[in-house]
Length: 398
Image 1 (cartoon, one colour):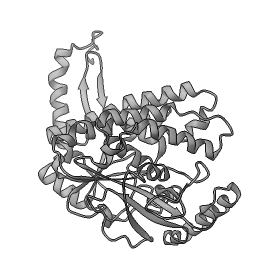
Image 2 (cartoon, one colour; image 1 turned 180 degrees about the vertical axis):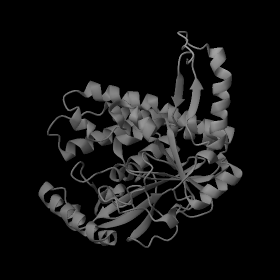
Image 3 (cartoon, one colour; image 1 turned 120 degrees about the horizontal axis):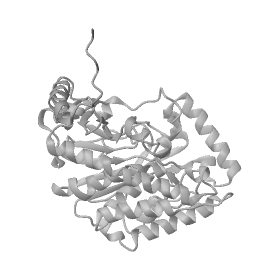
């Protein structure tokens, strides 16, 4: 007869040795498995919060030598609106703790909210600036029927509150060199009349389907950069491009232009230093900053997703992918699918939340604050992986 099953649960003491040995052997065989923690009454699976991917050179370098803050020379920041709040904890760990431990000259290059994140990190207290951006963005609220002019005005007030007269701390920062990406709009795209602008955008969408290179008919790329250091890119031959020096006369206008999404906000007119014209969101051309990064340093990319999408109009085109040659030195950090599944609504904040919670701003704000609080896990995990030297074990190919 088979032995009668015991009605008593095994004690933690009887479970721990066997299970812990099994866990250790299993992870030794496959270190990418999730951590397993033995509790008093159950086995808890600790899923990774981060997905880590690296280009070939970065992958080989990190697996051979590990990663130190001194290795990092450039940080890109993608467009993505409120998604930035969902990785606030990662920004806090990087700019509030990890990078300052190895101070050096670094290029920060961002489009749209990416440039606002990095401007915040250049303020005298980086952590305070990053938290302030999250607070101010969360407090934004728009009534049904809000106009482009009203959203632009609200964004100006938000920028004024964020910088609070501390513009010089960005321009004179001892270690960070800010690069702000914007586009100059041509033809109908230079107009804020909804009808003409809509026709212009329809033409852009059609041209983009035929080939990304055709967007040169509609946009010129500008990188408005700290003049103490050239932008961290090699020759830009994909679109008409030029560099403009960043200074006190154009900092705020450049940041505003970089986030001015057409049909949502008005374009910025006649950007100082860049000449006459209408300037808009840099993410229209460079949504996830698929750029030819220069130098031999690690390009550390704190991102919202593990995919690099070239342009804003490529979001719905799964075949439109980043150029692998441009990702050689990139180390990308993004929330894992397991992490996202545990967030309220199973996602990061996004612009659609303004409509989703149109008549319930307090619920949206609570959701966004919860997501920011949870994002501390992202930063904590990164700091742990770099401290214990196990980051290389977790790397996937980008």
